[in-house]
Length: 402
Image 1 (spheres, rainbow, N blue to C red):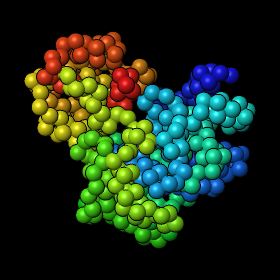
Image 2: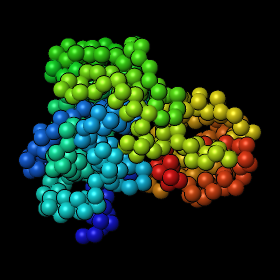
Image 3: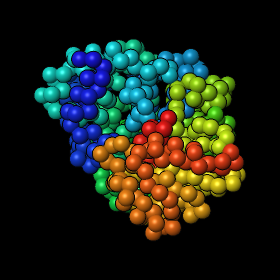
Image 4: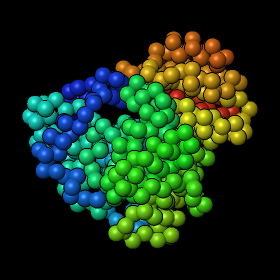
């Protein structure tokens, strides 16, 4: 198979959560454990840091990787979803896995994958672990896909477990309350492994405290830290992620990382890892900002930051997925803006007519468009030099304009 044929096969095997939603969610680790055994347990051949949470886990993972790269280590990085290319999910020192490796890996394991009926995410996790083992990385930063306890990545025994924060997202899988969601996320806290929690949230901190006691893990809250470092990642919300990433580094033993590595790593995250879509400025005149924030907590921070921007008129290109609780997010967007409603090109996308209608309830008015790119191009045509264009609502909207 060619690379494109390989990807098409992977995408078509079983529903993929990022595209299809709830039908792709699995309730146990049976498949990934079987695949790990088939691959001769690659995840046992390198050290890891496990990173979960509702918001910020991607940025935090990239920050940790960048710091360790500056310290001279060979660093694997597994994240999801990808924005433009599938190979973004699996990197070593910022370099994406080769298309040839993807093709070869699937060809070698195709009969097992078909027989076992692995999901897209399960086979991708196995691929990442196999690649990192083959390339003999010193350490790999592994981002949780969804939840924690039952996530396919949760077969690793990390050096540090990291949970950035807890918010009401993916409630159809993880629970309707913060406590239920925190319980699922806390599933990555392992026996005798230090655990770093990004934010001390009063209503759920006991979930983590109790879990840590149960497995005899030392527990640390990054929000208690007084350390402050600068980062090249824009967005005020990154300050929380900086504290989480640096505390995780401090709790990592067996690696030599000094303050210069931390400083340089945080200032070179984009250069070292290739991270995109976090308060990313695409153009200056008119100013165009895109951000992948897509739930209540994430959008609350980005919308607050948007209030600090100076502009004459605000244009917002907005699309969302269908399993999002719109009443939780639409009220965060400013009424005084011209909206360009669209739907990302995935099955999970919310119909643009539904989005426009529901946005109107919150006094968000504008026109609907047939595609993200059509909406974006019209916004650029209509915007004057002193205006601002914000693109967001979904990772997949941002992906289509990058």
